[in-house]
Length: 148
Image 1: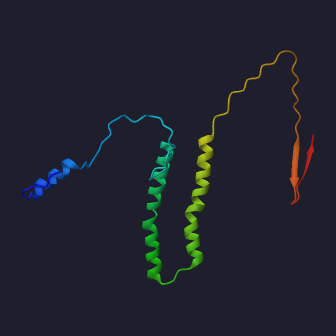
Image 2 (image 1 turned 180 degrees about the horizontal axis):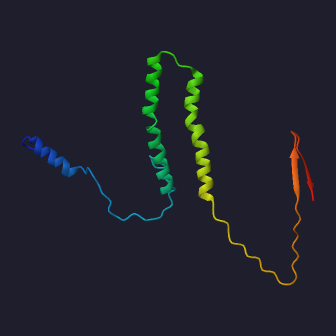
Image 3 (image 1 turned 180 degrees about the vertical axis):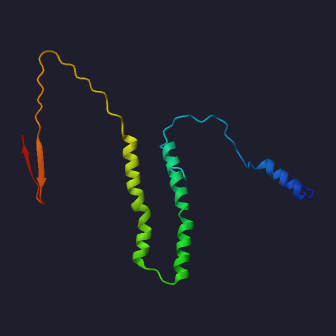
């Protein structure tokens, strides 16, 4: 390689260097759909079903909704200068104490189905037993007496 006789400008030197040195390479060959490489955990939320994503979004949104009432409660306690721990505990437990039975009843009602129609078909002689049994249970330690 021969040395240049005249000095090169900055622009010409940059262009020459760009031609000599490969600064980027792009491989356009198609990538196979399946390979031997094991999957790698990706950053962010883990993969889950759409129902789970919707539920977690609702839970995150509901947790943000607790900030204003909490801030209001802190302001009231600071303004009063006195906060009884028992009263605070009862106030904090009241929503959970009301929500648990309501959610349990809602879940029971959601799973409730009407009773199926039952049809009995008999052939031949049928005997019906129509005894009446009276039962009484009394006392702390219960004893049941069935009488016919």
